[in-house]
Length: 428
Image (cartoon, rainbow, N blue to C red):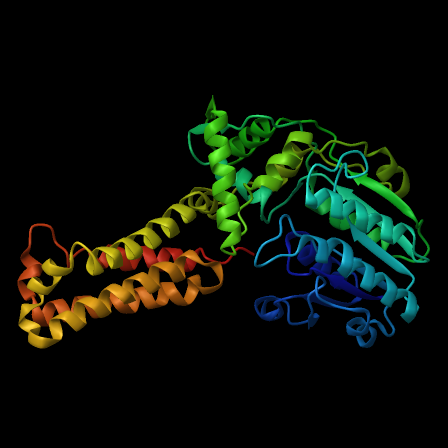
């Protein structure tokens, strides 16, 4: 059995590749930026915290000794505080290739993207193609895999969005979307386990496309049936509203979130993801399964229904909480300041300090929830602040428990929303 380094081993494809290679008896090392949760889920695999985008040749040397094959599953849709597209797809790959050549690692299986050799409408596809060319110019036994949209029992990014859109009875149709040939995750994983073997063909680029050409809405309708729902009613989304949603996604990306609906996705779905799987089958003997067959083999569970239903509600909850805390803070420090002082009159000289302190705390919680890196701690802080308000209100203004607008009673559902946001915060 071989020693295999899997880069991007916490992602949708990478985690399943690492698990499959481990099942086959290979000695697997999983590489990712953050490995803590993955290392606890898969403790039988060796883990290495390393960021492909920032790693140089020297960073790889100690970890490539004795390695037989490298599988690169790392990728980024769009640059932002959490991702560097050129660093991941070009500079990081160039350093990895050079390090493999220096260490004597022969085989590198690399994930690119469907159609980048035909059209590059975004930084994502341009950098993917540049990375492909770097690998093709190397002395390695390279294999380039160019998958369409990958669908499986797990979901992330576009595959998660498809499930989320399958939950409501109304299905928006985005303008300028081209056909897809989605591919089953199990077939993709089987392809990797085939190509890591040293005796199989190398220096080949193959497209991983399923046998069926579907529209995006047709794919969502398939998932809706899988979830047990009647077909959704489709309606065309106006171009101005679609543009607003893409820009909103870009704004969320600047705050560190990774929504699948961003300007890069807009450009990429306009060119579609269709290809010819014949070379794939010729090299590997794998006949890609239709997506309906994949879905039929894994009946939807109640957990799948929960995920689909919560997927679109998650951003609604997070945005609502951020607006709630920021709005509360601005109101306390602005037009509601005098009223706040009046309500806290029993606090005496401490009333202004309490109102100002509370307003600043509200602002910080709301801004913290808005930013991906600080969202978790900010949600916990929001619960703590809400509980403090309940205690302070009970001591200083107990009559508010009987107020018709129920300002203190409403603290309970606010805390519940925080707990929902915390439970759904993790993306992979």
